[in-house]
Amino acid sequence: MGFDPLRESGKLLIVFGAVLMLVGVLLAWGGPEGSGLPGRLPGDIIIRRENFTLYFPLATSLLLSVILSLVLWLVGRR
Image (cartoon, rainbow, N blue to C red):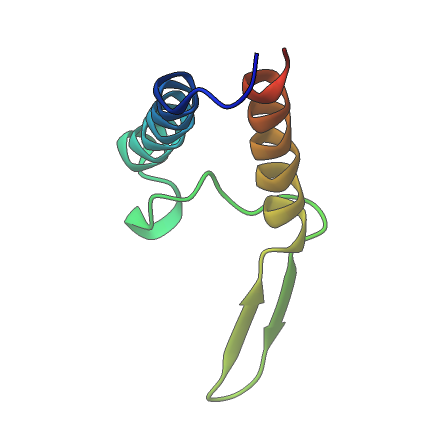
């Protein structure tokens, strides 16, 4: 069977399409302060000081990683 460039290109286009759809949904929802993100999930780290705010979206990053891994796994199955 071997490497089929047309088939692999099709899989890549499916992945890019799924990622673009996800970005579109995030932008359409608007999120907090119009950021386009789904919001602050439990597990996201927020540090507020007098002149400084650090927002580290740990839970959001993990959730997006799981979703993207699932999509890539589904596309890569044979």
